[in-house]
Length: 231
Image (tube, rainbow, N blue to C red; front, side, top):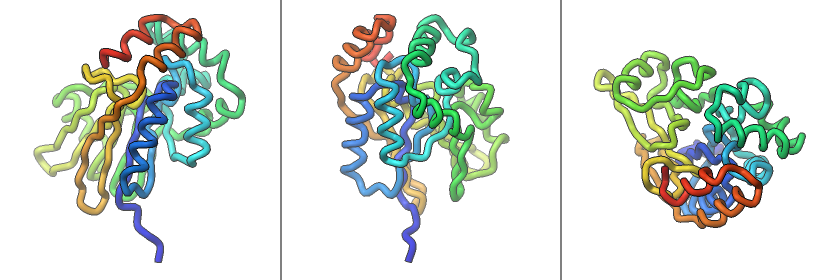
């Protein structure tokens, strides 16, 4: 009998940070996980985009498109990004190989499974890359989907919003490669589809190695420095 997918690991915002992604995969392997899903921004900021994309490809990880991924394939002009993000996007465009670019080009904007919706930014017009930080923004977003839970990333800050009317949830799973909640450890989420339980997992990794990759690539030093502070 086919086994139902019960426990899912959600990862997001890897941003070319290979040491962080490898550490997260090691952590995921220690849990009884039935599948792993990536919520976008595989590339951007970090200096190991090819290796990160290839690791997802080798492990057949279903993924959706993030705004930094979109910038690499030409559907989001890098000029709409801040200076550091634009420089990193232009560097990634120049350094990402054709096979990995084709992989990004094929990523969907959203993904649905069972009673779950997956987006990168917000269920409100996912291709507009809106940021979802506050309960007020969450209240508006609940009207944009019907599933019992929507998983997202984009802000790099783990948070959970619950709709007081029907108990539906919006869950930000945090960032693998560039946390911004003042905790430099990688973050991913574990969700049990049967019980509905969810928890964040924090993972130590060698951010000094990721920082060294960034500096050696000639990318802005700020992108390296922020890794140690989780900002």
